[in-house]
Image 1 (cartoon, rainbow, N blue to C red):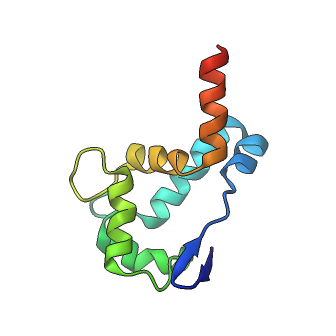
Image 2: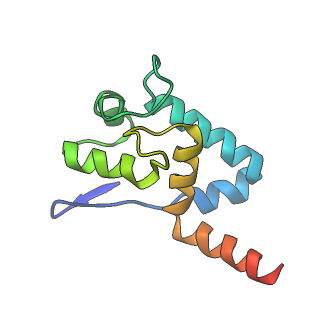
Length: 109
């Protein structure tokens, strides 16, 4: 992640990970990332757990509003937190290349 003019640019490594690890390996790695960010008592990613654990993973200098937006991106149940399923869906949704591959496989199949 690079900070540029108060905006963040993320490098999309998910397609490379998917190619190298396969579907099962990618999901296992996403689960590991989830557990690094999750609140151990609730087992979910919350605003507080992102504030506490996020800096270890490069989420520095992000406002509460930015962190809430990350949660809202995947919060399918409108609870203000992400469970493992929500997190994985959000990660895959934010990977343009993986979404293109998924859509092309749906359309060709």
